[in-house]
Image (cartoon, rainbow, N blue to C red; front, side, top):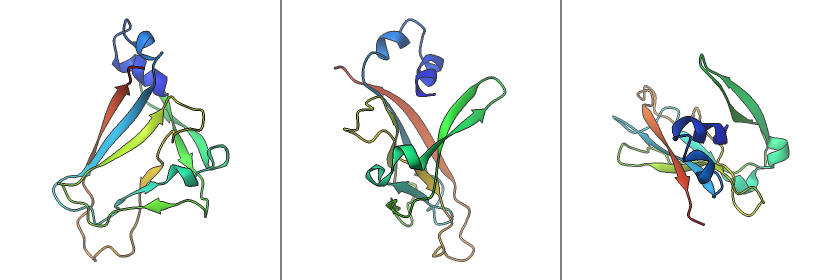
Length: 139
């Protein structure tokens, strides 16, 4: 799916050359309008993820194409973190893919919104935006 994304967003003359290099998909996530108190974003430390056991491919079916993402199976060993009350001035960078797959770096960061039992009663619904960047390295 990551390689397909490169082909979908870049000119046909550029994609094959760029795909010979290391590349990543990095998302920038941030709340908009008010702090994300209701369903804040949580990130899982990749070092606590067993790729073969914890990640399962999930098909994404769109009207004009198909893609793939990963679902994350529960594992009590996962190390989830979040920052309470992230506001519009805060952001987080999320690695969603890395072409280095030899175990030397995190290949992705599982992330999700979650129902925080400590959210104040009547907190406004989370409003957030996520931007995606294709990052290519000169190596």
